[in-house]
Structure formats: C-alpha cells, structure tokens
Image (cartoon, rainbow, N blue to C red):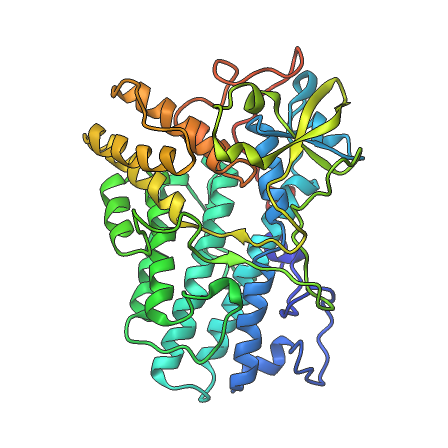
Length: 434
C-alpha cells in the first residue's frame, strides 16, 4: 500500500478526515466494508456525493502554483516556497514532497480512489437496475478521467500512473502520450456507459443542466475535447466539441461548476481573496496590467490596491478579483474554453480564417473588437495565447498552454529576479519512488 495510495485515506465520503474503519455503519460516512457487499442505493449515492464534493479539494493550489510558474500571479503569504521554489529563485528546483505538488496530486487520486470504490461496489450489489448501474459507471469514469487529466497536465513528460484500481498492484507510469490516450479511452468507455443509462443519483446545483445521462455526456465530450487538444489531435477535438454542450452563440459561462456553501462541514471557495490584504493574497503579475487592452471587460478580474505591495523582491499594484465572494462557483469547463479549443483546432488543421472567426467572437464578447493581425501560424498562436491568458487568468491553464507552444521559458516570459528559473512541469512525488 505504499506509493500513491499509502497516504490516501480510504474512508470515502465528503471529508477524508480519518482512515479508521469501524464495524458500525455511519450513513453519512460509510466505510469500505459497508459498501463492499450489496451496497444500498443510499450508500451508492453517498459515494457519488463524496466524489463530487472532493473534486473541489486542491483546485486553488492547481491554479496558484501553475499560475506562479506561468507568471500570471504571485502568492504573497507566509510560506516562502511560493516565491522561492515556484519562481525558481536563484535556481531553486521544485520539491517533490511539498504542498504545491502533493496538495494537487493527492486530492486528484483520492477522487479516483473513491470512484474505484463505487465501481467495485456496483460489482457486488443487486440494488440497482442495469441502466442505473451504467449511469453510475459513466459518472465515475468521467470524473476519474478528469482527475487523471489534471495530474498528467501537472507532471507533463513525467507521465502518469493510470491504473490504480488495485492498491496492492499498482500499474506502471505511462508516458505522456500513452497517458492521454488512456484517459481518452476511459472517457469513451464512460460515454458508452452513459448512452441508454439512467441516473439514480442527484448532483449538486453546479451540475444543473448536466445532471441526466444525456446532458452529462455533453460534459464528458467537453473534457474529451480538452484532452484531445492537449494531445495535439485536433480533428478529434473538433469532433468531440460537436458532441459537447458547445454553443458558438451561447453563454460563455455555461458549463458544470464547483459550488460552495456555508453549511457545516462544507467548503467555501478557496481561491476567493478579500481585497486589500497584506498577506494571503494573489498578486497579479504586472505584465497583465501593462499589456491589457483598454476596454477589455476581463480586466475587471484585477483589483487595484490602494497601495502597491511587495514581497521577496517582487511587487505588484493589483490583486485578484476573480471571484466576487467566498461562495462564487469555480468552473470545471465552460463554453468559452470550448471556443478556444475550436479556434486552436482550426488554426492547427489549415483553417486560419475559421480560427479568426471564433477569436473574433471571443474578442467582441469582451469588448475589444475584431482581430486585425496576421493569419500566419505564429501570429495566430500568439493571439490565441494572449486572449486565452486573459479569459482564463488564475484558472490553472496558462502554464500548460505555454508549455505546449514552446513559450514556457525565459525567451517568452519575464524573469522576475536575476537568476530565477522558469519550470516546465512538476516532479513525480517522492511517495511514488518509495
């Protein structure tokens, strides 16, 4: 039980606070033993709720750690590693056993583990019909694929441990290419389960409009489009978009979301920051202020401070205003991202004018008018990266986009202090090497 799952608590619902498995069944937090044989519908649904709830854990670290590396933001707080390790101060390397890696990595695999418990429970219960069984499986596999895709984005060419179903016999690390293909295969398998299935469970308000097998399948295809585009399979990405919830004339914000509440035991938005704080703040990298286009509605994500702030020889005049309150939802995937994937796919499949058409829809939605630049590949890549960097500032995407197009280096990004490094991926966690 070492490596990934040695540190993952196997009590599975909502808050992974204890690894003790009691004989008594707690309906609010059933142990593995209580669902291993003939799990009830209520127990299966608690597992679903636990999966959705725990997906939210670590989303702030995914965003702020990658955002620091991509020079989107600085994390000004009490932990020096945020401005030392992540920014490569004086050549500092990323640690393979610290929070900015493990908080993102472990939480993704906890969700995968809970989904595997759900799948195992389905193998040993008579509480659901065949259609309901398929619905649970389609949900679980889709979420597993999403979580594993986030791990692979984090680790890059270090690859991915895909098969973790048996804690005593973990599968090998796959290459980046093989990992993406395995994730796409899992999404296709999940889609097959969803077709003709039924949902015997409910989801939170964050999945409103995506809480039936057919509508959840459009979410599945949206994630498949993201993974295919990251893999460079743009024809597949276009195909997946056509089966997703994409609407070129639709609401940019439409899509499943992480939601939060003040209820006892629930989470508040971990990426929300009160204005004007001197500590625990995301400071906008100055380049986003200096390069912003007048009239761009996306500049409202940046709040000017009454006084500029500085830490560790870094400084900034603006702080995050990305989320209005501590209960603001966080997008999992939204229509605007699918627009960017379509534009990227068109420019990579010999359709520059088609790419410009989509980019113009994005630009005009944010109030900056049509694109007037060149339509060569380099021009379009730069325009795509620029627009996406403002649309998804602080949401954990820019690092991977820059890496993909060879711009995650000091030729394209500013060096914040002499001697700083720009990292390109996170290391394999120490626990994986034990």
